[in-house]
Image 1: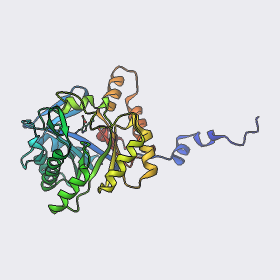
Image 2: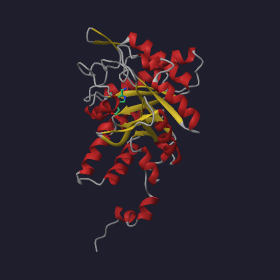
Image 3: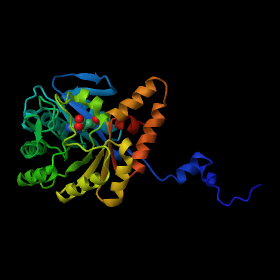
Image 4: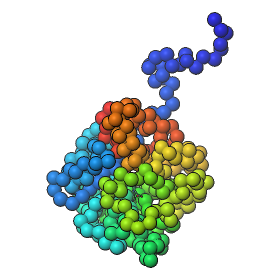
Length: 322
Ligand code: PBG
C-alpha cells in the first residue's frame, strides 16, 4: 500500500459523489434556440446539412417554438428567408418583412417565450453580404442606417432582444440610439461582439441562402488568429451600450470566451454554430461518435469556459433530456 495522501479518485467513485462535486451545470434556461423562418404555409423543409433543423413557415415556426417552450427552452433567435432579396436587403427593415411577421405571431401565440431578433442584412441581400455594397466593397456607415431601421422594426413587431450580428464598426451604438429615439429604451442588445470569419458557418449559409456572391466576409468578420483583438471588439461594444455579448463560433474559440469571462461582467453567450452541429451529426451517422455524449460534452465545455447562455441547434433535444 502506497502512502498516497492525495487521491483525487476518491471523489470519482460513483455518479452520486461525482454529482456532488460537479463544477459546471447545463440547464434549459441557458439555451437560445435558432430557428429559420420562410414564406408559405405548412412548410417544414429539412436543411440537408443540418439534420433535425428546418426552414419553417410561420405556422410551423409557432409549433416548433411552442414545443421547445414546453420542454423548458425560454428563448429563440430568428433568421429570415425572405420572398425576395435586393441590393439593400429591404425585407429586413420593413414592417411586413418575414421576421417581423414571425415575431408578431410568436409573441401572440407562445406564452412567455423570449424572442431574439438576429439583426443583419446577409439573408436579405441579393449579393449575400451583410451590408451595403459599392464597387465590391462593403460600406460601413451606410449599412448602420439600415441596421438601425431593422432594429426599430423588429422592436415594433415585439422582439424582446435585438442581436446585431454583422460586425460593422459602431453597430451597437447606432442601434442603441435608434431604439432609444423610438421609445425602446427598455429593449436590450445582445451583441455578436466577437464573430470570426469562420468556415463553421457553411451549413447556415445553405439554410439561410446567404452565401456571398463574390468575395468573403473577412473585411468585417474577425481573423481566427486574433485573441487580443477580440477583447478590443468586446470593450468597444460595451462602451456603445451592449447588454450581453456573444462569442461565435464556440468550440474552436473557447480560449477567447474564457479570456473574455475574466475581463467582463456582462452576461456572455456562445454560439455553437451550424458547422459544429453538422460535424457531430455527420460523425454520429457514420457511427464514429456517440452523438448524445458529444452533445453534452460540448455544451458543458462551453459553459465551463464561461458562457452563461448558449445559442445551440441542440436546444430542444438537450432540454428534452433535462
Ligand atoms: C450572419 C450570421 C451567420 C450566422 C449567424 N448569423 C453567418 C455568416 O456570417 O455567414 C451563422 C450561424 C451558424 O453557422 O449557425 N447574419
